[in-house]
Image (cartoon, rainbow, N blue to C red):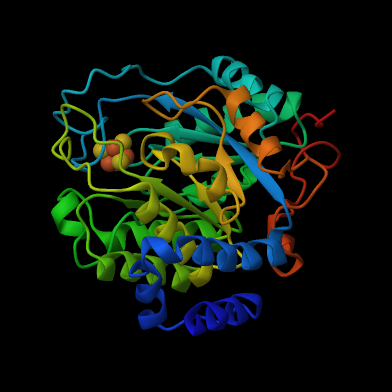
Length: 354
Ligand code: SF4
């Protein structure tokens, strides 16, 4: 297919496909699915070889959010029967993180529900980052705390955070349909703040919320414009007790096409297979490893994933390898941004990381 040949050539050159080419990937037929995966796989292997990065979520604060994101089980008024608790203590969070690191995770994602952190919350998270890094010096820590106020990204960076996650989720056009308490622009601004502070930006989407192909292309092009280092692709988990509880509209084949489209538009970004992979990709999960180069290990924020060992077996069986702590995830032209300047130990008032 000429389309796929063009997309591979552009992907290897990190050249942006046209919107029509991106949409055409979503419109391919099931007969063409393996050709689409093979083409996206060429781009994936060019930038990331056969490595799979494992990420581990720690939900620092669960539920009780005042925002109304309709896809979220932690939203205002959610009737979903999820765990609800306030901030984990730094040592509790560090012990939760240790479980994921033992399983091979390279990045720990510290997530808290809420519109955004107070300065006291940033202090709390800073202590948590220290508690984790004091035990595991090599781990990458990503914070995901909602909308940031001025100066908070700098403080997180100074505290040792390597990355900040804030997803765009859906197209600018339809954002108001999934959330009324903040805007698409609020989200985009937080990603920019993280980048300005020198944090590696992580920003992605949620597919399966009733959006059109055009919306998916829109959000992925908005992401490419922001140019985050990692792009998590979530598939809606329609929780009972949330407004989107009945949105079961993805097939495994459609989920694969969406992943491939993201790979072609963001060829050298860490494309991460995120929430909902088990319920939507089902037995096609191993095939998705040919397109993505990163997954979450184990459980999600409020729902359970497949057993960590099953993830590791799947990676090995599919002929991929877990990316070790000594390997740099991103291609050279991006990875320099991940180096953190030392801000503790000799020459500072803070204890050394030893
Ligand atoms: S996505 Fe975040 S901000 Fe929105 S309701 Fe859920 S926890 Fe709150």
